[in-house]
Length: 150
Image (tube, rainbow, N blue to C red):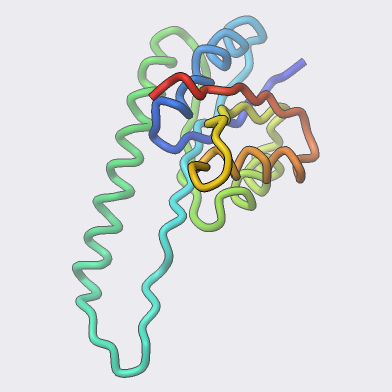
């Protein structure tokens, strides 16, 4: 049924609450998995006559991306050791749009993610992101609440 599962992560334990569910699905269905992290930090935008150390900015970005890749690679290594076909992607831009675009581009049969289950001012990454994806997705979505994980 599901042959390719897209799993957006934000590096938090709350977001990772989806991983046991996806692991089980991938093993049972022999599905491949794409782990995805969206880097939503903005590009360098300068005001007129503003001076900035571009090399320092680019080095900071490079280190951030390396950290993201190392985070995803740890999950990839674990899942590959139990014969799950898994890849990783790092996207950039608006989180919801990037998830939706990646689902289409990768031909994902299922998007699986955790909702932080918070509302109002306390809403974090997957509070509003989950709602945005839910309202605009054109394929099946597995959404779990992970409000008890930290």
